[in-house]
Amino acid sequence: MKKFVLGLICGVCLTATTAVYAADTIQAYLFPAKFEVNGQNKEIGSEYTVLNYNGHAYVPVRFVAESLGLGIRYADKDKVISIMNEQTNVDEVTKLIWLVQYRISNGVDRNYVKGLLGEPSVERTNDDSQQAVWRYDISPIQSYKYDDLNKIDVKGLEQGDIKAQIFIYWSNEDKVERIAMWYTKDKWIHVNNLYEDGSTTDAIYE
Image 1 (spheres, helix red, strand yellow):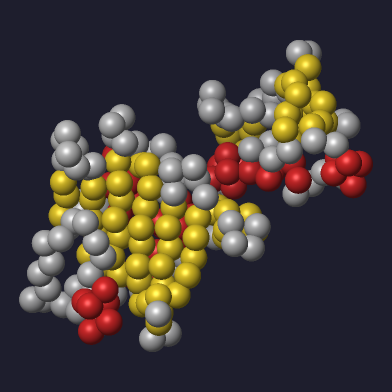
Image 2: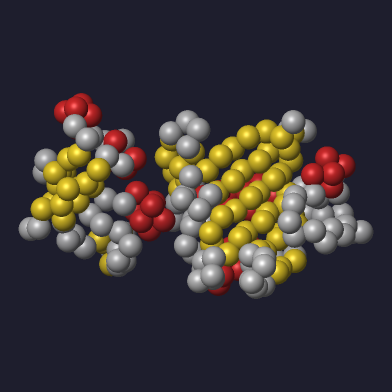
């Protein structure tokens, strides 16, 4: 098999032995394995690579988690890869927050997002001056109205006019580029961002 030199990445760091930390690179082999999950063949797709390092298979954690029906996200602040079952017996806001955090990643297309979240409340198409964006207003009051597609309705969140607001920004190829999600929980406004490079931030708005 063709040799493959790989810089230290998160997925390897999580399972590597202490010997790996002594060097800037590791030497692994491409491992063209096929996958079967609960008796069903699963195509891994060209965006993923399986490696063999020291006799162990290193597999894409997102591919494996989603093949098992689980959600996955990486929290940069704590350097934690979180894998979680889909939320059940929860309210609409909690479920949608989970879907955004654990099921939507950079590069997914519009049909995928609509399949999870439905039609956006408001949308703007891409042009020469402004980026395409979808806005989802979650659990708004009946008279709720907010036209701005450039910033979160913080006042509406503070007053309880809306429980969450999600902005999804699209690339020129109609793929998810970044996400800004604000929601209320335990009397606080929480801010969750997914950036172009795949990194995330979680904070409390004060």
